[in-house]
Image (cartoon, rainbow, N blue to C red; front, side):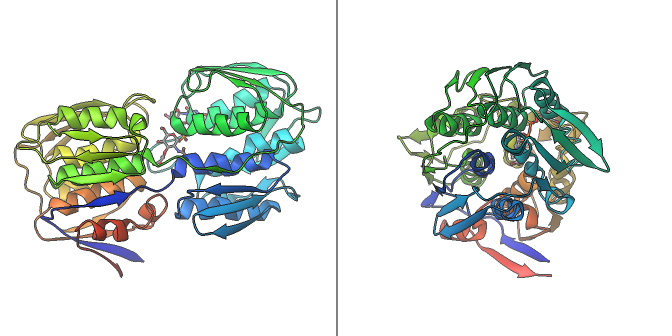
Length: 421
Ligand code: EPZ
């Protein structure tokens, strides 16, 4: 197994280029199932989760061609409708084929995703929405079996909770449904917005993009002609590099971003006493005299993202004072705490609230273990300031969502080496 060796007490400098957003690209690849044409998607991140999703498209009978940062996907010949356990167990986002497969073929079978390192993560809201659109759903031998012999019908869906994947699955199903679907309490994340925009550009009328009420006028099973497009920049990768600059108290320019998507992160960094310069497609973070503590509550977009919580916890270990992080989305998203403690951090957990005492702010390099994607990136950040060398094990988590992490970090001055155990 591979691991990363990172030398601490680093200063970063220069510029880093942000890749396309994994969490935008995954539903967008699923949406190609709604199309009758080959689609070229550019600014595609080169990360393991994308390759896994492409493998799923291939297993269903679709095809793809990679050309540098673009991928051409053709789902016109899809002739299978089962997402098997083997693939779903490696990537929960496989559930995103449920809505489009059901809408296009009238039936499909998707292995029920189990819990994961950050929480139980049920998919009940996805299933309830599809049932309200006329699907019959049963769970048999660990598989979601969905049928809609007469096609899906437009319906009014009120989500009990804001769900990114649930909104995405429902929008994709609604695009080919018969009639109008109104989604109330829809997710507003930029990744959901791009999915809606791409489907809208394919001729499906979608009202309310970026608001909590989406109205989708379905085509009654008429497949779409999706135009070629670029994936939006990854706001979580960008936020992670902003935290890398902050924790090492360095000046760093982060390029190829949409600054408005980073507002919650920028605002918390400003509260921590960092100055952030912005132009249309980049942000530059400046060093500070003193890192101030911060209080964070994770919530849905446009609030502070749960996917940035672990990175800010690493940063809070360097603040002069006591910070708190209240995780409201996932019940178990604190696996990084015990690993940060191994590096010498002073963190107390009480239910879903972590208190980080930054007054004793020296971290010391040691061996730590990555537990999920964002937890792993928090360990990378902590390793950049720790005294001595840190070895981060199980980095396959990082490879799922950060393109060329060690290449990008090395280019801005970090000493990072990938090695085999
Ligand atoms: C997406 O997951 C992201 N994944 C996650 O990114 C991100 O953390 C999350 O949204 C929240 O922003 C992708 O986009 C591929 P949810 P998703 O449905 O869609 C509960 C990363 O590191 N819920 O919005 O699975 C759920 O348990 C990852 O890149 C139900 O109860 O998240 C959670 O508490 C990890 N029933 C809350 O809603 C359901 O049917 C929000 O989850 C669905 C969700």
